[in-house]
Length: 548
Image (cartoon, rainbow, N blue to C red; front, side, top):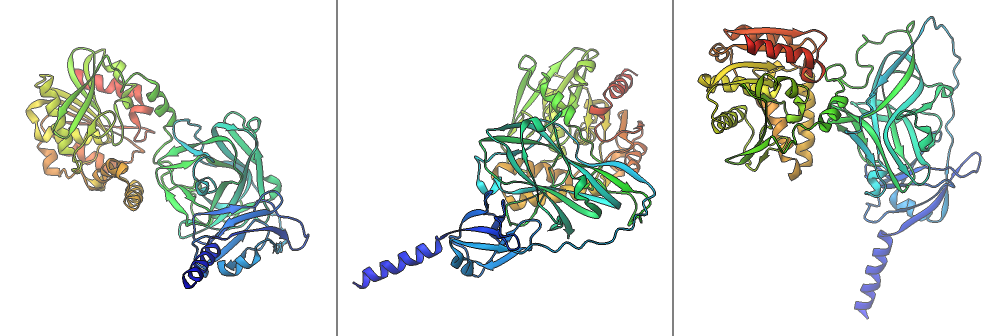
């Protein structure tokens, strides 16, 4: 009998902890159901959203009874209760109090309103935020946001969302939010009323859904965030375009906001800037990311390179088996050998505009650096530029090429400098494009970005991202080429960079100055992406330099 009582006690405890609480959220003033209300436990990654009639059901299994349960929706005061007390409300109505709108007298002294567009404008289909209800529900009900910074008082007219593809069996329900900033993350939702949209495919024009919020009279100044959340499951998938090297923010329900430094959603806003208003600081990052203007949107080039034959051409591709790696390379044309070395996390495809031109004059050997592109690295050692240079020497030996030319972009340029130091007798000429001699030569904003990226990778600690972690670490920790080292290079070197490069211009000038037989060229109005954006000029410079 005692055993039976103990069993009943265990079952009672189980059912209490696994209790599913249901109810209806009601407006305290109007006594009407409130649709699409967020209900979840504070700081947790799971929750639920009420339906269009305010009905909800939430499983509170395993939650500490003392934790706070939150109910929030724009236009109403937030509701908070302990999990233990909230369990008592099963099947009952939850009343929310409407926010009191403080209507202030508006003294219009606007002298000049200027139209601006801020944010991420890419319409790429190769870098995406995918919204798919078939995956985990807590992921689907999560929220993504983008940061903005208005130096002057500005009114938001439209919120634009670039959508690469849309498949759904019914209208997709979305909520827009506008948050204040605290410690670099979204904080409080400052909208006084709900902004939800039932998105259908015909509302997307030329890859963009534009939400007119002009009548909402939203004025902003300083840092703020625009967030988007999907509220109702559907059968299908929505892909939102995203920009590489931009910072986005995501959270799962009431979980903490997380920075995503690899890409940001294509949210942009049309605003009216009051130029007569006080400027709280210099016009700087009104675009929501400290890398804006430093790393351009190259999604168009990325798409074109992926659609090219290069990097996957079986007729010209081959492998070199080395210790711990299989090095993939492709060969084109005849003549003096020219090795093309891509940048960090890149591949042969990045030279899709160089290979067809340069292979008319040279024997082009385009290489996927170990652990990148189609090259496979099975070692667990840290990557080093010296190791990359040794790989190129081994490939040149296999191809029976005693003296070679190298054109290296970014990390590829660093590998070229290391090759020049280690194998001077095997190098004819070298072209570096956006290369650095030591980490301090890189713009501090990119260094900060990479540190954040490494922090995320270390926290995630996923075995499948070991290679990605090594590629970030090599940029943060290497190279270590001194001025004395540079002075030892006797081969002719063409040093190229953009005047808006991530490599500091004085650093590029120092490299050219220290190498005895170097020529310097700074491209005007050019970024780090010269092989993409300045392909014709670069091809001509390489041909000229090697032909001299």
